Image 1 (cartoon, helix red, strand yellow):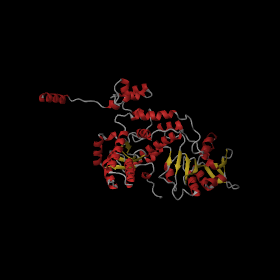
Image 2: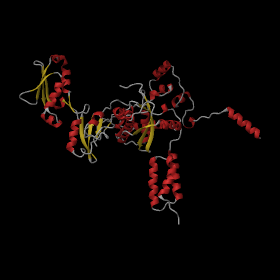
Image 3: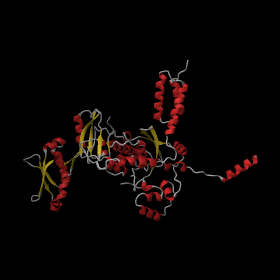
Image 4: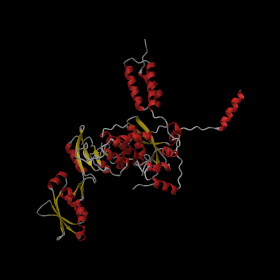
Length: 85
Length: 406
């Protein structure tokens, strides 16, 4: 039970995984959009850091949804331009 | 004799439509069909009919392309909020605490304030601790921050002799689990002067002030410095109470410090929760913040007995976390970052927005609804979303072909 704190296991954090580039291209083609049109996630985001995502990656997020059971969302990893304190 | 469908056949049929429905619906359909099939009363034809009907109805329930979901969300959340109590600061499920509820809380969430008015943490505990009240109390004691102020009975400054006199409260010391030595340690750390225990009372501490603190004009400063000194626990956590929830004890804390609380042994860090959304974003990431926004808004509305579909709240949370950070719904956030100049000018500080855009030489491509209403064009919603494009070359070709075939 005890051990290292791993924020990926926290109740509020859904499953995040990096989409491999080949799959990402296919995904964008299917959705018919450019990557920046996806919701973003900061490269400094604690979860993005924990899974080792780099700017330009696309992260697949598998959320638990009360209406759909499970819902797959994507976020585009972006560099922080305006650093918040 | 009629032939009944087997479970294997159901799986096969369902596999064909798996990509058309949600996993949850798939699961439900699968278990229910198998339930009926086990009673040997379902034919293959019937099963196909049922599955088709479910798929059809699911697709009927989906949002149509071009549906103005944002407007519907705004109305669905806006109307109930007019029914909310305007000012409720007292009384909450937790009697000992003052929790912001109702409209003030809702505004707080959508404004994405850095700090809620009444930060509260829910601290769950690990399996070996959560049933044992004594152990729970020990954890709570570690979490609750203790200041010198909390354990002091008497405080006086004698300027004639340059001495600060502290009389500690033995009962409070025992209650908070702090020893006199610990307090002395902390006071020495402040570096305001020589600290020693009085010879005739073990709970009396004298601080012989050093030169620089003898200035009478700094009396208030010295006072707060000594009394607000942090002895034990986690900074920002003002008070804790222990509550029984289900069969386990949990700690409710006034004040919030997610990072530090997660590190305390005995705390189930997987389930620690705070109502400070900004803190959740910082420690657990944007997706957790999104989940927290949904949870907080839902709880606030439920508290007031308002029934708003969770999908509206999910859309709002999605919009708020779109950029990877929690944005407020307002001038500085979502409404202030719209691509259209006219749309931005419609919402608060009109002149300022127009001047700013003029200075920046911005262009308005009229991409969305508000600006198109202003200039009286068809808005890109519903059937207005689609446009007909004509290829004159193709038309010419078509025409010549049809006339040639005649």
